[in-house]
Amino acid sequence: MHPLLIIIIILLPIIVLFFIIIFILYVLIFYSPLPRQMNDERFRHLAVNRGYEARFIKMVTALTKIPYEDVYITAFDDLELYAKVYKKPHCQQEAILCHGYRAMGYRDFAGITKDLLAKNISVVMIDHRAHGKSEGRSLTLGVREVKDVLKWIEYVKKTFGKKQLILMGFSMGAATVLNCADKVEDDTLIFADSPYSHPKELLQTIIKNIFLPVAIFYPLINLAAIIFARTSMNKLNAYEAIKKSKCRILINHGTKDSVVPQKLSQKLAKAYPDKIRYEVFTDADHGLSYLRDFKRYQKLVLDFIKR
Image 1 (cartoon, rainbow, N blue to C red):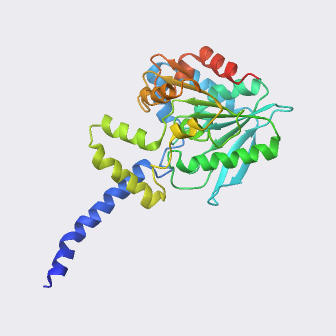
Image 2 (cartoon, rainbow, N blue to C red; image 1 turned 90 degrees about the vertical axis):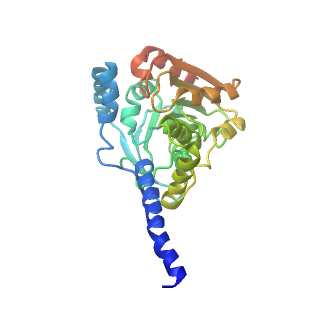
Image 3 (cartoon, rainbow, N blue to C red; image 1 turned 180 degrees about the horizontal axis):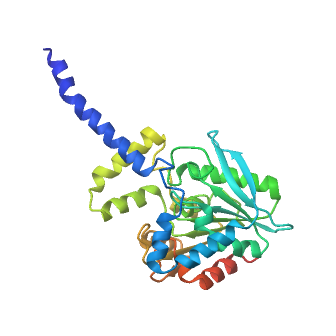
């Protein structure tokens, strides 16, 4: 047998196994939607464990009774994107709400949406690509989501005219709106709940927390994104976006966040103390700051966006 053929026979199973591992990483991290992704079970589990289940169900139920308009736009790569639009007559501000990873807007913003509408602020509650009624099969932890939000901003300007824009995001959505900071008008208000600065930082932190070698697993995960999602996790950096921005920014984060560690947003706030107002919610887990202390949360957000 030819030596080259022997080498190919030996290497082929290794190469196949390597690509199987890469594909599994892609499915676990970037493929969407997964079965059962769009229900509330994961969030309800947190709410039940912290004693907030009844309040959470009440908020979601109340929000689902408010009428809205179904709106579709076309993304930069021709995917169809969806949002629920809650229009308020004679509004002077519009808010774009960006939900978290494998989540839904009505869940992540069940409480604050009613607060915004009560202040006569129109709300555009988007479904990120590969979520809900939006098209796509790959979420990108903010990389392509930033471009999608810029498309939604175009829609808002055409629909509502020259009004003050509020960008609000939670978790992945929070990272997304922070990375829009240098791409929007200076009077835009940005509120980020439980953000990370860029996908690389978050992924490396998670890898460390589960005691895996970052030097091996992060390149594999990024390669999975490049091959199957066709983008790199190294493209986004909120530090650079905020450095160039003149927008007012409010960041909230729970001190017991088990998904996006509070230290990630704390580092960002310390880097730009003159640009970022930073508020912590003691003992709040991921996404539970509103439920833990909704009066303080409401006051912080509504005072921040007050004209």
